[in-house]
Image (tube, rainbow, N blue to C red; front, side, top):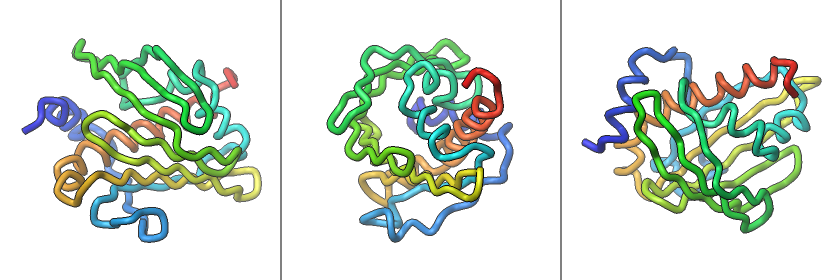
Length: 173
């Protein structure tokens, strides 16, 4: 098994299990290669979008519980690069590099993770009154890779969104 997956799987056992898979056929080329979740957040789409757009905010919530980030490059624009290191609670470091493939202010962000494991993350934001419905779909290179990553991704994505919710609820925005 992949050592990165092993680290995250130990976190998965203690995380809450309230995730649910989305119907991903409209957002992916291969629904069998996708892992998704959704959530209604108590903030408007502008505030949620800002939590992605502003690196100081993004660094506070990106990644599973107890992870921290060091951003080396963050170009929030079409074709912009995002290079960073995630620091696990066990002291391990995980190099990441992504490219912003689509940015529609307050409604959609598509990020291509260009190092292994490759995936395309599509985040959609839809206003629901003063709240936001967030859709989060990771499409991996194949159904086989998705199957290997699913236990990690499902848990880590929920922890990510828990951290986003906490940031949105704080007075730091």
